[in-house]
Figure 1 (cartoon, rainbow, N blue to C red):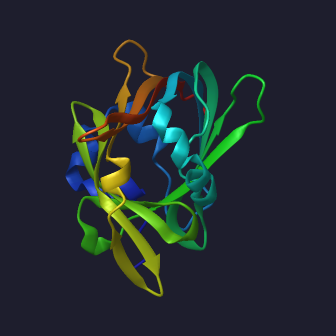
Figure 2: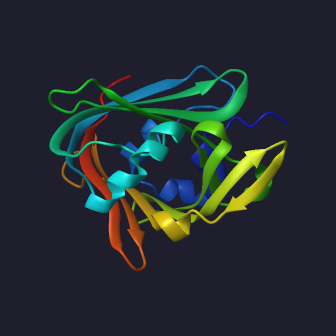
Length: 206
């Protein structure tokens, strides 16, 4: 049977109702539809460790890393579904001063046998497994390792040894029902923070 619940509602089950209303509202898009949502805001900080510049050529190849740094960076995030599949597509558009808009594109999948886990894929079938949870109204993602999807297989990749472990959250703003905050942190157990960004977003009427 074709799933009709939003991707994260499938992953969370009853815990979906524990999310803040603004979080549920911008993810209430049905698989196998042409539903679309856009949120806009600013990244208070976009940062990477100096040595992480060495990773940028690979990041550009796979479309997985934001190569610039800045503060108060305008951004919009476009979410969409596709009538032909159950994926949730993301297009994050960063507007760094003096540079062309930078697009960070990916898509997320959830299979019935994955429980509360989703996989976020970038180019060439490289994916990050993410455990999804609802915590104090926030949608939280915790890194469960990298994979390479090829020829119908999901092959584990030891990229965490180089990149570290990711943590992402989207949290309702307690003072404004149409705003939420988000942060992403990629931290290595030996080298400390590798990448991080954080910001505040507005979800208006769609």
